[in-house]
Image (cartoon, rainbow, N blue to C red; front, side, top):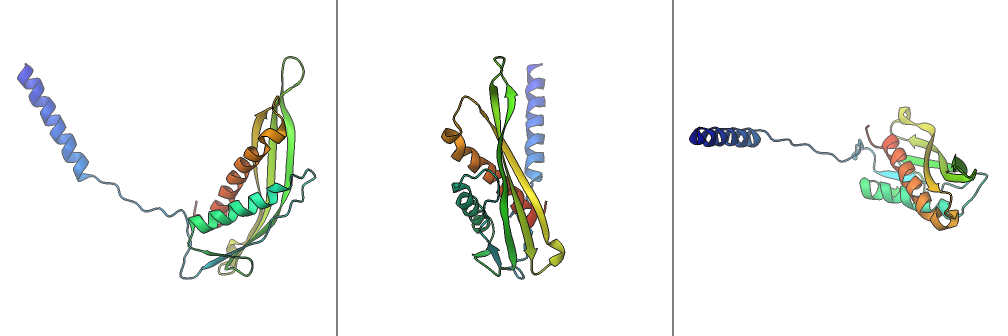
Length: 173
């Protein structure tokens, strides 16, 4: 009985090894759908804050993040104007709202929200042009002062919005 179990186990291992070596998965993924023979540059305007509530570091944080995304994830040269791909827009909303109330009647959770309006022009394929709003939000405990958590929360929302914009403009999702 013991020999049969060992033989069966050996056979199963040999079969598994054969199947695993016979099958291999190979794929390539660059994250973009850019034809670099045609499209070589991207221009990014500053995204000024047009929201009612303003936290001034947001503008430069957003611009740096979107510039970095295109510089690091594509082979496109980032220009200030007249790129093959052109992105412009403004930060149109930055707000905070109470999300939940604790048993003592005070706010327990606060939601921070950011919305960016984006105009995208593809000078090589105008059918891909659009104007669209991208939003992100995050929650924080109301016992925390916004000033203490604001930079990290804003960067988190910016990263989310930049990913959305990147996917909508150059990633084929």
